[in-house]
Length: 328
Image (cartoon, rainbow, N blue to C red; front, top):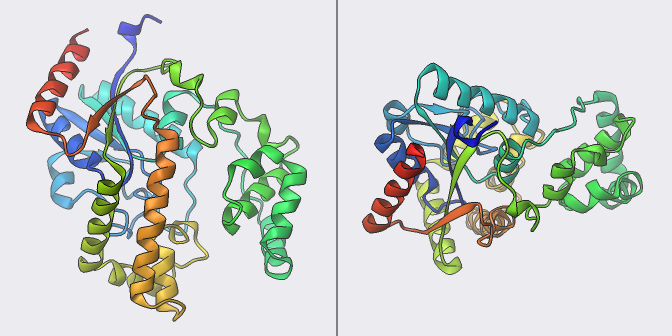
């Protein structure tokens, strides 16, 4: 297929807290676009403050897709994201003749979509899961991780060995499947832990995508992250978590076992003082931002990098480049 016939997609990537959403809003306004979220936590309802979702005003002004689409007790996978994002792109481009703008920092979602990963479909197995969770409690995480290494070394290498839910799920997949999870596509194997030098020189199959990356000097980025967390706490993040708990959601659900929500739940359970919980959230968010650069490398030739905050001069240059790309 000639490149000019491929659907044009604008993509904005970068670490958390750097201003991707505001840049996406600005470009959507200037180029008649709609925003398609690529954030693994913003898909969940009732979790707005802690995931820094776009405001109601922004969503009223510019249509947003893949935000608030599933309850926190449900699982949302890479395979579901790829399916839903493709549908949102199709509807935006073909049904409404508007520019799809994919905005997010979940690297697996971004490259899974644009590199055409073929994600193996392994359904949850409640019997195996229950057995593994009982063993986790009795035998400990190290034992299960050691077993995962025996069944699937590639899966063991690419997950966080300290995350019990990731270890249990990976072992569940390994035990449920007649083939190892390493039967995933070559692209998925290469990208499971982030950057791959050969991958970075490839085009994005199926789309004519212009990928814009937003970056910032590391210390300044950490300051932005810390300031945003302080604002989130002032805006009622703790109360948001309390309401989730009151509605039956908790650490047993993967949506709430992640960054920020887990620390605040542990504070409510008396395990952490509030100040300590907030400091842990900041520290873990710094670490998460560093890991995002494993997915979005400054050396990746497919990404057009901008320094944040984006100046008016730089934005004018960007819009000129986008306009030329759209007309090409």
